[in-house]
Image (cartoon, rainbow, N blue to C red):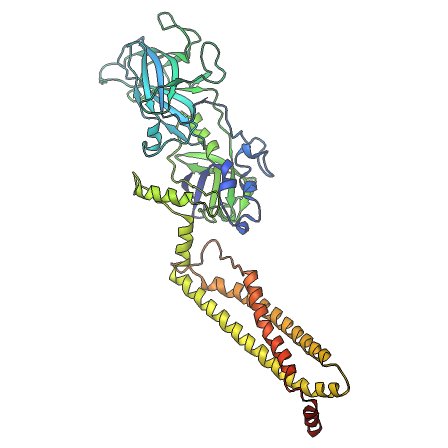
Length: 519
């Protein structure tokens, strides 16, 4: 994922998230209230066309998220071998270099380091180390990779201010492209999709700079090597003092006119936009047109002022403009298969102790949650609320018991008269229990309702961040229904037992009748 800062009209700063939208719905968690109850698949479904048709409010011209441009490479590719011939047809003062533009399976694009091409030396093999794209041997590219473009560039050796720039020309023939799964292993030829018996791929060449000419050749030029070839081209240019480049793209690169985006309400409020609007968004020294297709309360990690777009679609913009690569990835999100998945913890331990440790920040979701719960500012209110809850429960139980005992004593005289008239003792006990149950039920319901209201009102006011501000996302108060019900039942049982046991005391009906007569 690439995260960038975007200045907003009101002076605040928003976060732009370019992420793998096709996999975000399954792998990225977000609280239900922050996404208005929508599923994560629905939240990110419009960012990449692979997730289905455009959603409500999306542009009907949303580009395909799976472009056919490029030459797919086998999974596990660590080295590319180019078998080529470069013949100079002009003054051999140029220094031809070859760079490649590749895309990984998440849509991230990379430019390989420069490889110098020998001129006039016959057929040679130029290796390109792909592991260097991911700081190998510690890392490796997220394959399978796709070769998008080749950039053939020229400079001038020992330029002289008084002399006119020399004419640089040549003919380039790429005979074969091969892939190796190890730096020193054997390479296996790669056949471009749609290539015929000649092995040639469908190439598109950018317009050459002013004063230059270049053309793709369908057949070998006189004196050039014959046989199957992946690419044949002829160039003739007067190079400038700086680098001159020709971009050859495997297939036609289609840059989307606009990108779909998911914005937060805070972002729309700060930018004065609404769903369906197209906003110019600065990114990497350029401007990207983003159409807002959906709004949510917040985005993962970024907060309530953020905009999310698809990484793969974003990468097609610089790729179509001079075969430029995206800025470097700023972070990786590595979700677990479940809450109990031990893989993220093992990966974090390996990153913290392995080769290259110390060059990155590794955060575990469980560790962040534990740190928040252990924060003294939030621990003290939690303990205070727990003690308060226990004290209230004890006081409620004592009050219920006292009221039940007083009621049983008050009914004892009435019960004596009814027993003398022949009323069954069991019926009187049931009546007392029913009366106690109604009172306990009403009192428990009122207490739970008032307590829940107080918790929802008081707890958000007591919990603060270490800086003393209100946390974001807003505090979500969750009363455990099971434990609340058990506590309520335990308190309500006390008056019932008091009423029942009180009715069994002093079974001497004659004595109670004498008390009635005396009173």
